[in-house]
Length: 210
Image 1 (cartoon, rainbow, N blue to C red):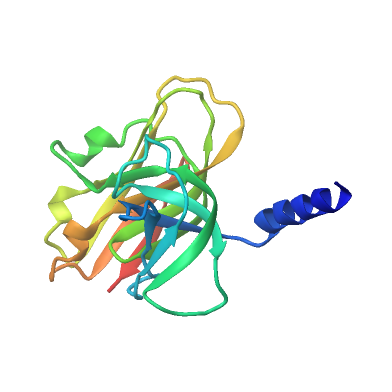
Image 2 (cartoon, one colour):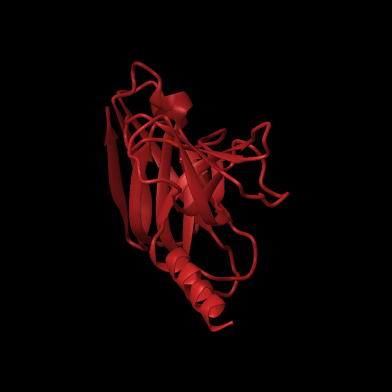
């Protein structure tokens, strides 16, 4: 019994200390029942298909972006497909770039600041890790294209974050992934410029260049 207990502790320790975090695309299950995830490469790097014996929550649908905590199931490196051990899978905000139907100013009233931790591009996705004030209620949180710039070489987008009059409590981590492929693939687009309110008096600017 003591040996079994030690083995269990070592197994738990491995899952807590030897793992990776990545935002990936859930691709559904294969014929053998393995969950499949596409790890889209950083910037324009090649993607890797991850497969694991793991049961997804019924609320997660194929093509949804998720935060995966995992480790490689083997010691080899490289390859277009890798087996992994999944330790946890969390739903995140998974959305596509939205378009303005009204003047831009209509959408930018009462924008609530956030605390940015990191922002990066993987293929056609803009991903971000930030902190948001907890309210316990739903909010507006989406990436909005300024439609007057969609044919320009620099296309402007704004992160809309509104909580209206809800009471805020502590800050907590949040992850989001936005598909911007419809704009990023345009030959005219050379720079995707994101405006994110990190201070009530000014926007932070993040440029993604081809």
